[in-house]
Length: 253
Image (cartoon, rainbow, N blue to C red; front, side):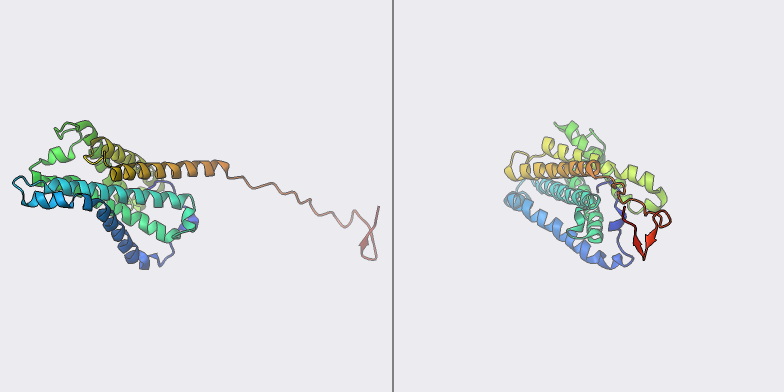
């Protein structure tokens, strides 16, 4: 989801659509792998909540969807920055990286929507779920940051489809909000997440934030330190009329 402009050298070829299905399947596999990392810690409690007197399954599903969404959005950010940093040339290649960048963003949006909407099963109102700072919970301020991130994530992600109508400049300005969305999502997770105190959740938060920050700094530094083309040091050819020759050889001074 990184908003920086894609270099022309990494533009997908005309037949890039043939690679869409494999790229989408890889993105789905990434989301499933992230879920496998998160869910085992909650599975016993999730099973108990389904059979206990006070079912809390919706809260466990919401938390799982939130982490899967964050991992997918992080992957989309990394791929977008890798394209603009030209690191994608090394692996997996510009067209594939761009396709994965888009697909992981869309999947991240889907899980981000699931994250709060599944709580409708806990009889929360749509206002509590989607209106910033209206949840009524103890950490409503930090929850509100996540709600703002979700409201911004929709247009930012769907701007891919509207790029032709928006124009390049307006699309790039809108897509730049992806950095704000990611920052708000990480802050929301750290400050209001139930699992923030666990080692695995802390690793997800800090590794994702630090890696995105590193790639942003790398791009800024590499852009500023890229040397400009050196001036030509080859002297202009000397006119043959200025130096008389004998038998085809220049006269020695």
